[in-house]
Image 1 (cartoon, rainbow, N blue to C red):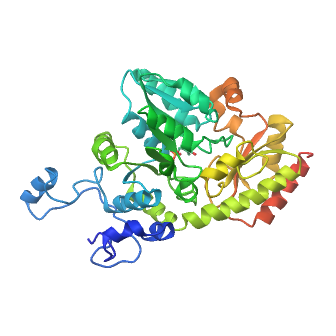
Image 2: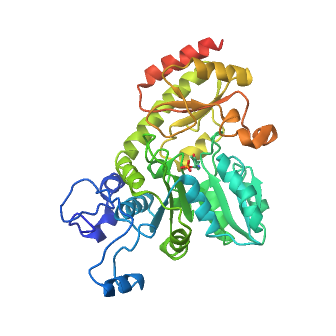
Length: 402
Ligand SMILES: *Cc1c(COP(=O)(O)O)cnc(C)c1O
């Protein structure tokens, strides 16, 4: 199997982002297939017993078992790393496998981490229900408050962990400040970049150490598979994370990796088009007098900061029905085109009520603290014609008496 398309690999780092998304990590077998091949195999065979010994000893190149490496997965890892501007990437079975692996590879008993309070529910769950059992403590801060990050640092703080924009309030963390602060204190920054992806925001450029993904979302982009990814330095990914992963096993299926590999070819097109559609629909909802949380709107408190670190504002926004849960349910039930679904990043528009779904387990106090209102609806805007989405939302707001 050739590892490239006949192109000198040293050239690939000079490729512009659109070229990387389509071409990076394309390996071709002797058949010369144009599209990336799907390798559905768990094991490998060898020409001689000696070759096995050499591969296991790390003295010869080649794969030994799909929990360790697989060609389709290796192609995806190479492509994601190239798009992110990272030295290396490893993919996992899901976004949560990526977050858990990235955290467990850095923290030991007695360590402390600081996390932003607006976060994906399961990310918070890991901190309180997994890490705490192993003597790893944490402090939760308002990610928008630079001084709070600084004040939370303890002598044993090892990691800063946050998403930006965050789910579902779209809170923005100041990447330049927070990553710079971490660097100055020898703290590792782990950014969950699922809402933006490398198409819209590249945290490594602002000094982040690790970027982790739910590739299930915008990277797949068509709601098909679960995949996760962690990007970082060669030393961390190959020296620390790979051995952890090959021995503990949260590996990605090669079929799922292949689906995401093909999804990445259109990531940038989708991310920018969905962002443009989201802005148009968000402006419409705001124009109906409803409070909208979308970093792309000038009314959003952190609009300027978001514009300084993102190339566009992503497909997701939230809006708050003044009549609370009942009115939010009326809007969701009245929409005909937009599906009720708690997924995001899909080419289909999807909406949900975070307080009773994604953020249900936090309880009313946790939600109030995080700014998750009872009347909040989170919507992922897809690739439908935005005018059809506006018609649908308009009908639904009418039904709710807005
Ligand atoms: C969906 C999501 C996750 C979890 O990813 P899975 O692929 O569902 O495991 C983590 N973080 C964010 C921000 C997400 O949106």
